Image 1 (cartoon, helix red, strand yellow):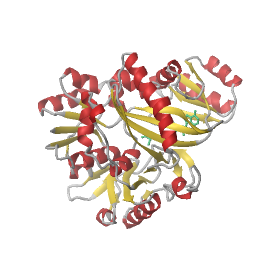
Image 2 (cartoon, protein in one colour):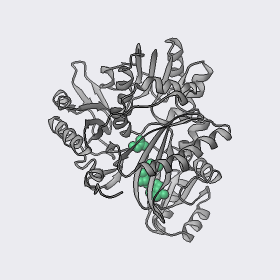
Image 3 (cartoon, protein in one colour):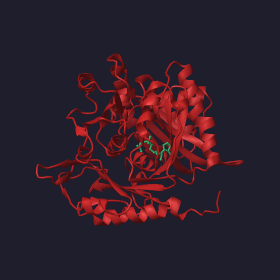
Length: 433
Ligand code: AMP
Ligand code: GLY
């Protein structure tokens, strides 16, 4: 098969790494890719949001499957355009990608199908939004309806902060059209976990849970990022909770989307809060994403024993009911290395050395996110999140030790990482349910 992966982050490096290992893969392109991806795939200089050129490339090169990494081209309709051109793709069409592209749509769908999520209302009028906030308990969560590159959520601890967030979006136009409508929802307290399923329109195949670390600083301090590290499996999601997630959240969503004429295919990524309930912990849906998480994907694919490619093909073809997955009996953990200043403005172009020494640590794979290569092969930072140093081992604790040994083998003074990725799993009392 000839494959095209769309995207340029650590997630796409992990996808290319897994797909290139498939005996079914004859040719692998990645658009636009990065310096690490260039080691496993042929990079094509087409941006992930340049839909017309991506479709033309796939048609001209007789691509058998396009695998779309990021959300923006999915929400913009890349899979729809590929379908018109007769090209098979893994990922939802625009109508189904609305689960991530419009938080209001996602909340209304949950309401129609009784999927547990925080209480909410949708607003376009700032005065009505503020009046609603005045009636609710604090903290309260203000969200831009559309895609806002991870910056569209404010957790407001007082009325003034909420009012400012409302005005910035609805009056100041901070998020453009993505923030012309807001979802205002109740705050959920608990432990967050990400759960992933692959869906073919009707069948949902559970993958696994992973836990991301969104805050930039150790101990979950400082501003939110795209994710500073992840590990899988996540012990907070017990088998009993996973069953509840499938029965109460994933399956009703898949059925509801199909019944509403928007069948979902691709990765359904449920961001969950595990909240205390009368009979023990309960999963509540924070949000859906319509793609793999980054860096969660890196940890899931390190643990997957099955060949990924036939699974993605089956999802695209509607034959997932014939697929079973095998997993390694190991944990995986990924530490993100970011350029100094992230998630604010960063200085790009600094040289990264020691990559071979890092990759030589047992069980370690170094995924690239924002990197580029000079003509002489020097790897340079080109983005906020730059590397994903990932390790696979018998336990999360051992994977953490090896990942940080690899981090310490790198020579990149302008880079930084959190030093506590995986702490919740490692400090969790194993006797706790
Ligand atoms: P997002 O940018 O949509 O991924 O949301 C960013 C983060 O905001 C989530 O990962 C949660 O940590 C937090 N968040 C969003 N909604 C809520 C909520 N209703 N209650 C508590 N935290 C929330
Ligand atoms: N790591 C969170 C995300 O991919 O949205």
